[in-house]
Image (cartoon, rainbow, N blue to C red; front, side, top):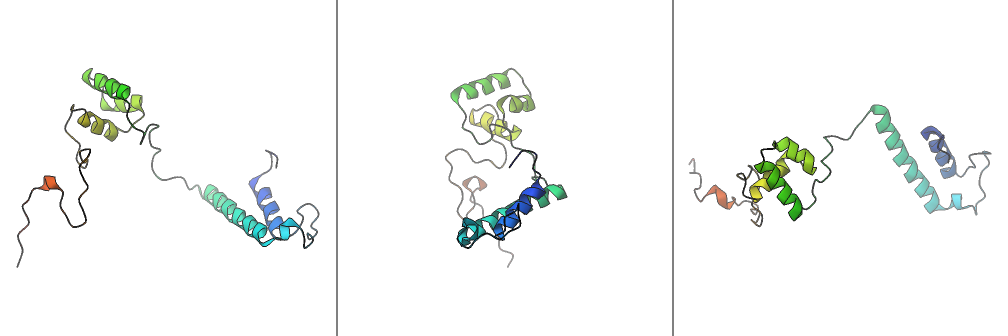
Length: 151
């Protein structure tokens, strides 16, 4: 396949092969041809469906939903990165600048600064090592008070 071959041509070739036909001559392949084997035919139809899905999404302009996560999203923090973050924060750098410099989201910067003791923990973040509440349980930081029954 050359780089100038368009997707429609690729699709036509795959369909011909899956149908047991030589795409160049239009002649049927002999029964002993690899293109007549059931697994080969199934694989070709699978590839056709995948290509059709890709082409359909491209035609409709469908794009991946949501923004692309920052480059270091989900990666562990190194001691050097922690030091650089704390130094930048102490120097008064805005959170957005710190996020860009570290390839992290603003929320990740806030959570890491909280872990380093620089700011309060953002809402919705559990302290490291805290177990998640089990189904039907309230997290420990909710206190022990239970709502009164309306009966």
